Image (cartoon, rainbow, N blue to C red; front, top):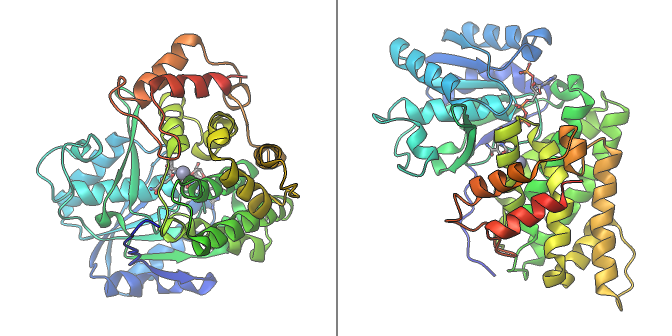
Length: 394
Ligand code: NZQ
Ligand code: ZN
């Protein structure tokens, strides 16, 4: 069993009433001059933005607004935010939205007190030593960023999408009202559920596999997302289903499902190259890669894949044939992705196949020109990445 540190300092306020407390929460966590950061129009249309601003002003906070964060959030917006925050002496950042808005906020929080270029953190040239506090009003359960230590930003000049993790990435509070996810388009609901399951699986498929308590939590989380994901697609206003998905999103990426295990993250790394280059939805990109990754590595980890099949995917076990059980588990998750309307190959993701040179470029980027490997369950080199992209290129 791997030793671990479990650190989840985010104050979670879950349920519809939480929105009444946003102002008090910002005050409690030390804010007085607040930047409300948001995406397109979804939070304005739903009335959430007006409600949040009223709450902030009611407790005497001074408020600035910065909207326009796009999915796969851009470095240029982060730079704009840093400039605004410095100019106005803002001391608290409030993200109202999904993972892209939260990550844009986190990057602004890192950049404001840093004298160099904020991209240094994402390029591995510097570590965050100080950051502004960030709070969240979550509208999309998916990225888990509201409780994670990660932040993912795209530098648009060369379509580099890079993640950076630091304890400074943990939000001070997260207000989670499942009703806010009622308005999600079906595609975003499905992509969110996929991302949540993938955050669980990237940890579950671990070489260290003697922590059955963590396994049990992960397997229950997977089953819950499958059941409630389909319910939410069928009945978008099913509070019970939306609530389990929202809480599942946070638990899948706050560290709980990796206690005692070793992370893998191969599919995320390969997907980040896809959404960096082609600007696709992150969860959809994961669904398009995972089945090909799984079929590439499963033979070396038969008992783990068989356990996943039986405990996570409801596959009936015929213990004598581990390989058949393992394969059925992979097929079951692939079928679930399809059922939710997610792509499971490149043609379904991009509307066309990748060219040979695109496959090479993706693997080249993901391996940093062949200088790094990814994954820990099976360590993947540049050629393996090429093989997996090629296998998904149907
Ligand atoms: O911009 P608006 O108008 O708000 O529309 C958004 C956006 O178009 C819409 N949306 C959000 N809430 C809504 C809504 N539409 C209707 N009703 C609502 N309640 O959904 C679209 C997608 O939003 P986005 O924030 O991009 O989605 P998500 O939460 O999936 O975040 C994706 C980003 O997070 C990164 C991904 O790579 C991607 O860049 N990730 C961040 C992680 C982290 N920080 O820990 C981990 C993840 O693995 C992931 O990499
Ligand atoms: Zn993810």
